[in-house]
Amino acid sequence: MAENLNPFAIAQAQLDEAAEVLGLDPDMHAFLRRPQREFHFSIPVKMDDGTTKTFQGFRVQYNDARGPAKGGIRFHPDETIDTVRALAAWMTWKTAVADIPLGGGKGGVICNPRELSTGELERLSRGYMRNIARYVGLFQDSPAPDVNTNPQIMAWMLDEYETIMGHREPGTITGKPLALGGSAGRGPATAMGGMYTIREAAKVLGIELKGATAAIQGFGNVGSFAAKLAQEMFGIKVIALSDEFGGIYNANGFDYHEVAAHMAKTGKVIDFPGSVPISNKDLLELGVDILIPAAIENQLTSANAENIKAKIIAELANGPTTPDADNVFERKGIYVIPDFLCNAGGVTVSYFEMVQNAYQYYWTEEMVNQRLDEKMTHAFHAVHNMAQQKKVYTRVAAYLVSVSRVAEAVRLRGWV
Ligand code: GLU
Image 1 (cartoon, rainbow, N blue to C red):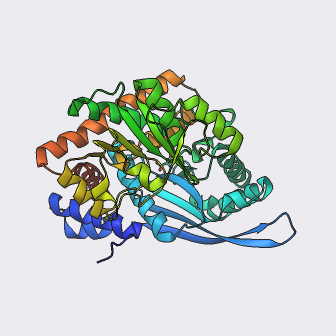
Image 2: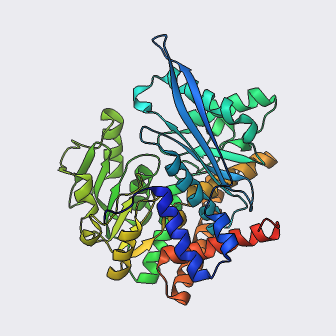
Image 3: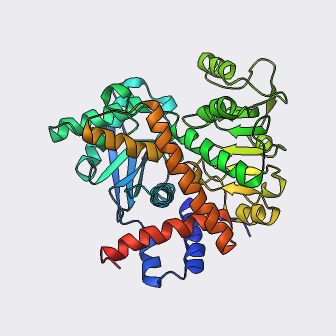
């Protein structure tokens, strides 16, 4: 039977498995299977050529029992409401596993930002915020960057929000530029958090990171920093890198700074001098110590799981692995650092950003990273210990930790 690749069906199936292991109350389970609320809207945008184009936007507030909803906004041509629902569910489990006082949400716009001028992108971003301004805010829901969105887009959205509301409320949006109240260390935070979990996984598995090999899929907000930090923090040899246009391979490893300079010039990693081209598919199947999917969902599926040779899979992307692939990895004994644990560094520093905004006093990058390290190390061991104790796969263990925390908050509020 063909594998179901609908991300929301996958997110629900993952929850179902955890609910069974937990013996979760069926009423609670039913409540946690669905988003609490969602917004669907049309965003008319005046294009540079004088026409008006209408884009479809979504914001899903999956669960806010533990605190205001939190999660990024993606701009993607293949965006669907079910993808946003799944990503919002994963944000709920992510803030819970990181143990920060926030819920989970996500937003999306069906669009191809590469086809938009800067002016069109600004009008789209402002139009998105006009539609949800009254439903977001420091104590309701706080958006952030995700696939194809960045600090400039966050700046436009915050400005639109504050203009509508008539006051400054910087914590409403995170991942802002530093000049508007962003946090030091937020740019690399997702990758940095992932590095801390890789360090802890290597410790429990007895793997030496210096000289270990890695392949990284994706060179955006997350993958590019992962390449840099893997090299700088641990001396990991990154032997393959890719972006949506294709990949590059060099058995001797790449120097991040050289690839970044090539990327800045050409907009792609391919054709990097001295590299051999490699497809995104082949990159995933390389015999590396650490595989880092840092792009989008559904990359490791029943179609390629048997061919994966990595010892550790550090999921910096959201939803890169399907349940069928999970079954294979569990059987093969591949150590998977599940997405909502591995990539929780981004939202953790977003939370630090909200805290700094609230008391209008800003931390150094060292302070941010030290606090992030504490949070990630703690979260990693909570999940690892749960996996050991209950003899379950790491993803199930991560769900057990998160779902119990969310369920406790829901119960205490008297919702279920
Ligand atoms: N988009 C990031 C994620 O998927 C960060 C979300 C946030 O900072 O709110 O975790």
